[in-house]
Image 1 (tube, helix red, strand yellow):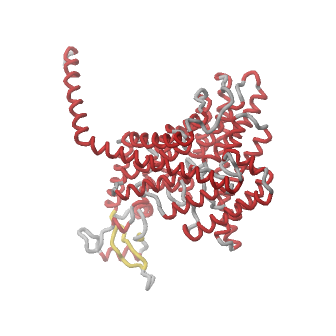
Image 2: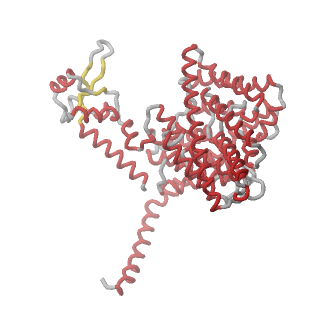
Length: 560
């Protein structure tokens, strides 16, 4: 083909593309518009749920602490009699313990980690009864001085809404996950007035992919959640910074690299403190024979005792975060508050009181950044910008490392503060903190939580998909066509070569590698005799076919 023929070919191709576009609109347009309408409705419902949850916390805090402004809880708590400072979180813990013991049963408050697991392993669905009870526990905890955040329960409440809708319309896995992403995006946006970060949080943290087919409905739902927030609170940011923040770019950027490493280390210490505290609390509870419903009460009492001298550690912590961002604290105060907030968060989470980790990580990060900034600007006053800029960068760096979400966290810091002029400094700190923390923990706080349950989401679909296939669902029964020879199976069982019917491919595939067998006898232990009974046989080829189909479906969804 000559060069002179190229334009005619391009012109001929354009009508074809237009026709294909029109065919798409005709065949799939109505269904897409219908789905976007559902996404909008879910966004509105999740946005109102987040708003009601936030207003509910403010109402109960006002009733218990007498606080007029929920962002000034620490100041009001400082004026209370000491016994009230102890009694309020202790009583909150008692109520939470009762709900967890008699309603939830397994002693675990549902939160963001369960939503991520539901997206990956349960077609975008989460539990209903345990989720409602967990939301109630988190509401009481946050209202009575628990040192955690509201984003965890809000995300799970939104996930329950999308799960109900998905069940009503009998949605498949892809649609269920998309609806889940819509609900989460709207809830985050409504909670923090952050539409861009809300949408990206749903993609980056919950769905853990950025498929184009999911972006439009999630963006619609996120916008709906933001509108609900602004109708209630106006177009204002959560934090207000004093004046403008500037950075001496070429000379000061190395300091932000170091700040990122420091914040990554602080994030790791925070996460490890939570997990170690939970293990210690469980061990002591078992050793002392402590009734479970008293565990949150003990945690509440400890928080109350700490709050007598340091009321800054109770609640979400926005007041102290604002003090850090405006540079109203000294280096000593910032360092002490970091240590105490980490301890308070660990006590709250180890006490199974409920709540999230995002807001506390913002406070810890802002305090860490301020302390670092005060030291850095003190050492190099002529080469440094404002120390409050370090507080802003630190806030994003610790939160991003804890959440394992550098993109959405960077954006939510900008949207929370309204300061878009310092993007380079924040991005540098966030990138370093997440790079360090993700090497030490399983990528994030939530994925580490899930890993502790022996579910390997952090390793990717090639690992966690194996848990989705039960051996009993893939085996060939003795009466099936192409079944394994019964005598051969019995002989293999006698040699110890078999797999339990209740096992998954995570257990079965390594057994194939060990034995080199074409099939494995599937057995179940008889409850009467205790002997192994033959149920069928799992063929290696059947296991690999099911696994490959799941990997292909996952890849197709993530790249559609």
